[in-house]
Length: 237
Image 1 (cartoon, rainbow, N blue to C red):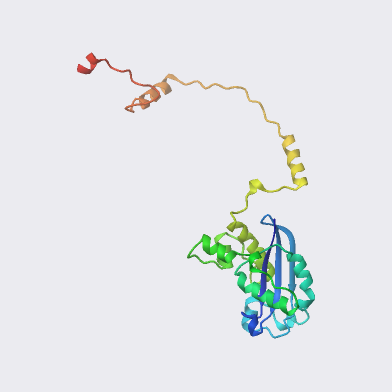
Image 2: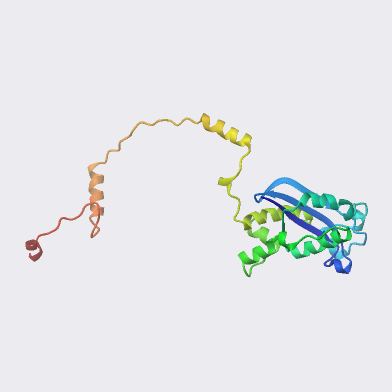
């Protein structure tokens, strides 16, 4: 099952106010696990990047001025994501910007029925608890050391790990091994030779038997040494 974990960075909060996409990062998953294939691109927004946005993702006008327009890369974007499920944190925000860019480039919008929102997943799984990407990374002990700024590719890679945990965690016992790994495992097992050990007996001393019997005798009833039943004459006496 192929899925695409996706994240964006923008110049602001709303494309209806003229804000644009400046970065897109995608991570390919196969059965919830990263394959190593990614798509990453910066875009020239053809407008200024507000200081408050730059403080979040670290991208500036100077850095973005020679980057391609979204319309020049839209084919590559659509080829990479294909028709597969998109895994996005707070998906409404990212899809809103992607669809604005797609519309501007003359392409059909992405449909929300192909999107899986990990923000909603987290809120359902941990009601009332913080559900930001940072909070979920801390909950699942996903390393945040490299996250100095928000970055679309880095955040997609972090979200891929969080998504795996939300889906139940990494199941090592069910990992799909490569042919090389299987062959290596077979060679390793072939070298193992279990030593046959001779049967051993353990002698219990009389003192140990006596100590054990005294301990068992402290129980009113026991299954090891049941007390013999007394006859009616003994009961009366």
